[in-house]
Image 1 (cartoon, rainbow, N blue to C red):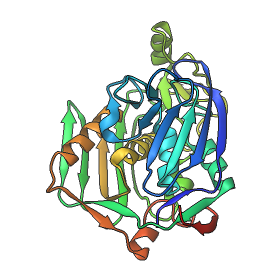
Image 2: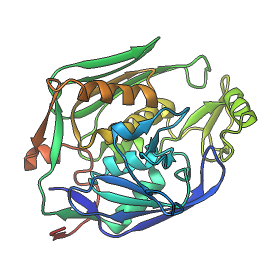
Image 3: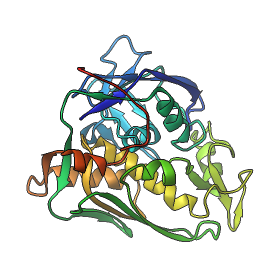
Length: 306
């Protein structure tokens, strides 16, 4: 069955790149609604933006979606990962600015707040996207691939010259709450030199050592150090989870990323949906739904015909 939130949750913070204060309210939504953002500060144009692979527009360092009237919301990947990781299929996300609040740089604050209000089952079947054959895209050393699998899995590898990160690899089967246990608290990361460059060009104005892991060579500059020794690759997996949530439904298949990022994952989804022989819709049986992200990780409230 499809799901939504038990009640609305509110988040106040600042945008990572803009540094501007923002309030975001994640609301329950009817079955079949999917993920939709509403810019509550926009009154002269259509404020609604569907969070889907074909509304993504090129943007540096984050995922940005935009409607036909030019209304956009950026840095959506962490809230999208939280919704997907909890198995929430339908949500209306109201926001009074152009950028999602960064909070602590991970998905954990979103997940914890949404778990407190619970997840509501809806009287509508859940459809998933089954990967039927491998699809791969690449640019330079970066590669992203979707291939058939019985569950939803993520393989990721990164390689940075900074010794504090270095080369990291991880494989996870995302069934039954893996996102909550393994990925949700891993923060965005960058090098100090990148921070200096971005801020000199009007970016990362809301970034701090508290909402990002900042490294310089073999040093971790953020107070308290790392939450996981391999926090960097875990965060790249979190980002991939959020970007794949824009597919339009849960994915049954394996995502393989090698030095991949937001743009590459979106390029992969575009390649997937351009080939109708590479995927199919599948109505999930109870057993199949139990193996998808989110199963069993949050309190369920009464079934509602929504």
